Amino acid sequence: MCDYSLHTVESRPAKAGETLTTRDFHTGTSGFAASEDPNVAVCLRPGTELAFAADVEYVRGGFLFWRRRLIKHRTAIFRQVNQQDSAVHHDALEFPSGEIVLLTSVCRGQRARVLQLPVEAKAATPGRVVQRQTSHVM
Image (tube, helix red, strand yellow):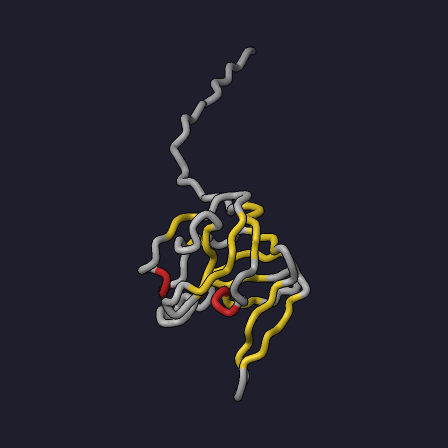
């Protein structure tokens, strides 16, 4: 999925194995861009697993200033947070430590490879019921 403020940007779904780069789309948020076209937002589904090329750096706001922070992990799972509030960012990364960082806070220019896409739930299809006949021999 792509964050609410990326809906005006051309986008496409992520593919397993591809490398993405964090980018500012000048819409009030940032996200992942396709390596072949930096103007295309690449949307991830919740549960997508990522491997970053380096430890992940992000910007954290404080009372008076913004500071860069480093997460000493290179893998993350894409999540959706704050879904009850439509006017805030939803795209986030969950790291092995349990820390969750909004994708829009991740510093620009970081590269991540899509390790695995989540399995899509399929609707149950009615199957054929086979009844076993039993015979009683006396």
